[in-house]
Length: 231
Image (cartoon, rainbow, N blue to C red; front, side, top):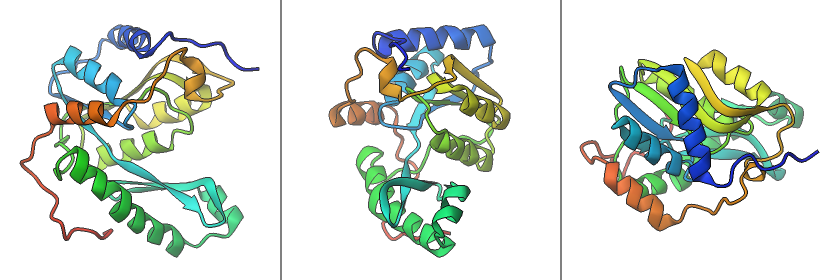
């Protein structure tokens, strides 16, 4: 059974999500808001304004199965971390060499160009010893959010909070165990797709993305053009 929409639009979803955040009484001093997708930037910007914090976008890219271009078997981040769907990889008999090779290619062909375009070549904003709020307009499989949590842990964030208006109940449980708190408006047992829970959900335009990123991006640390390999 398809769920009825939970929100009129992103504005309503954000207001309800922010109310949930306030109910948790989290200390947001020395914080940063990270969006885990382009569409999540709307929520990230609104939250950064409320918290008077910095903002950034964590770039990730999916790694697809060699025989099925719609089957995601892993995800790689701009920090060159990888989260794998091990059951799928084992079921399809996919080698780790393939996964790491595709991760390198996605990093070079997808992630780096996005960093140059939307962050003017700057590295991810510093998050060491900061209170990090990971935000998206919806979480489905939890892979990208898990990757974001892994990146924050490796970069020694002080605390990590996951915020989203809608999320499957089982994924919420998993993410709550790897973060300091999972904050959501609706945790659904029978999750369909994020867009099903908004009456109006237009895509964020490239111009809007650039405007938000230009407002917050600092260019003190730039990725050299020759940096194009996984470590």
